[in-house]
Structures are given as C-alpha cells and as structure tokens.
Amino acid sequence: MIEFNDVSKQYKDGTYAVKSFNAVINKGEFFVIIGPSGSGKTTTLKMINRLIELSGGTISINGQKISEYDIHELRWNIGYVLQQIALFPNMNIEENIAVVPELKKWNRETIKQRVNELLEMVGLDPEIYRERKPHELSGGQQQRIGVVRALAADPEMILMDEPFSALDPMTKVKLQDDMLDLQRRIQKTIVFVTHDIQEALKLGDRICIMNNGEIVQIGTPDDILYHPANDFVRDFVGVQEGITNEKMNLEDIVQQTEVAPSNPFETVSVTTSLQEILDKLTHHDQVFAERNGEMIGVINRQAFIQYLAEHVQKRGHMNE
Image (cartoon, rainbow, N blue to C red; front, side):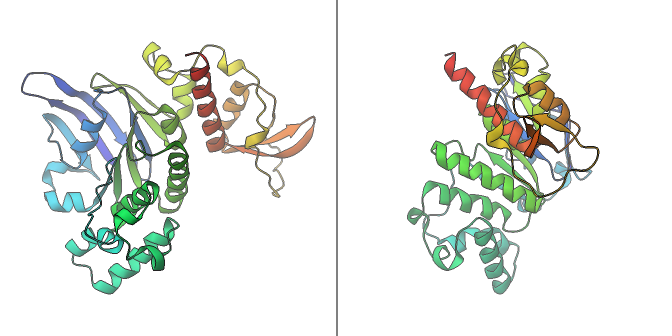
C-alpha cells in the first residue's frame, strides 16, 4: 500500500508542482494518474521512489515512510518503466533484464531461470531473444523488455511513466492488452502515468485526475465517466451530455460462454442504453446479454469500459 499524506513539491521560485496530494493506493491496484501537461503527474510518480524529493508531507509504503528506507533498497523494490525505454545498448536482452537481480546478488542459475520465465510471460521465446541486442528488436518488443526488466527482482510495485506513448497505435493497443493480461496474473501494485484518457479508462482500477498540481478527482472509470466532479473533468474526459442515454449495439463485446446463468441473474439487451448497462455492471462483474429475448453471451465490466472509452474518443474526433 502507498499512502500520500499532504504531499507537496515546491520549487525555489515558490511555484508548486504538486500541492496537498492525499491518496491511498491499495495493494494490487492499477492506479492511473492523468492530467494535462504541467499538472504534476510525473512529479508525483517520481516522488514515490525519491527521484524527486518531497517539499512537504509524507509518502509511506506499507506503513513506513520512504525517507526511512535505504535509498537503494527502496528503488530495488520498485520497478520503473519509462517512455524512453533506456535499455543498455551494449548489453544483450538477458543482461538487461538481469541488472537488478545481479545487484541483489542472486546466483547465476536463478537469474537465468527468471529471465526465461519473464520472456515467456510476455510472449518472447527465450531461445530467440535472450542473446539479442536492443537494436535488433522492434519498439514494441523493446518496451516489453522494459516492463519485464522492471519485474526482474519481483518488486512489490511498478511505476510506469507514459510507457506506451511513443509507440504506434496498433503496438500501443497490443501492449495495453498485454499489460492487463499480465496484471491479472501477477497482481502487482502499479502506478501508471498517462496523458491518454482512453488508456486511463482501459487500464485503471482507479483514476486520479490532476490539474495545476492538485487532485481534481479520484475514482473508478465508471465514476469518472458518469459522475465527473466538475466541468474540468467533464471536458477533460470528453463526455458529452446525453451519452448515457444513447442506444448502441454492443454485440461486438459480447463474449460467448458455456456457463449457465445463475438464478436469478442480471440481463441486458444489446440495444439498451449505456446508463442501464453501467448501472448493472456497477454491482456485477458481468451481465448476461440478450437479443430479441434470446441469451447470446456475457458483457464484462472491463470490455464495456474499453468499448465506452473508444466511443467517447470517436465522438471527440467527430466534433473537432
């Protein structure tokens, strides 16, 4: 667990990059920080591993202030993934992944097993990729290595600073999907900074929207979309009045299932309003979908939020 208590960062000229930041990030949570340029999101992230020192307040990890940790121990236990992948160009992939385990004096055989395990975890065959140099990999493959390098020493948490923003759209979507799948398996505490609201809605268990160094709203994707705290959030997300009452065909996100529905069970029509589906998904991880009275599958919460985020983005493009 990460706890921010009245955290601030003030520069010598008196301006605040972050002011009165109070939040609790739960163990195993995917917590996304988003905001316009200069909102303080990256500064907030970097204060967690003390790349930027606090001016006031405290940050605690598992009940202990970060100032009380040995700086090296603190950073070894926090994985860090940047937009600039920053792999060591003269090292092969195995050597890049092994940097922190070697610093922690793991034995050679354990490191090799861990490298193989991590490469397989992100769909890269160790026999093919272990000896390659970074320049021999695509941008998406390099970023996968950046992610697994952050996981190499099995840290409690991972900080990710706009890790996919420099990638082409198709690669970005694929890595987002991979990240969701990976998180379901490893259940790490992830703090993820982005400027892309669609990415935030897709990935985040909760989203923290910042502006001018302060928190504007923290909430689930549902909260942010349908209960924006103010006009800033509403405009930033791009939700327009009336969207919740629109009727849209949701058959594209209906998943086939052989599991018989429990009795009683929640059903929705694939042509119902977004608000009705959202209301039911607030209380259930999934609902059964029907068309003309016939059960055709299930809609789960994650697929619905992703679908809705894409729809919001499309509406924004249409109205530009």
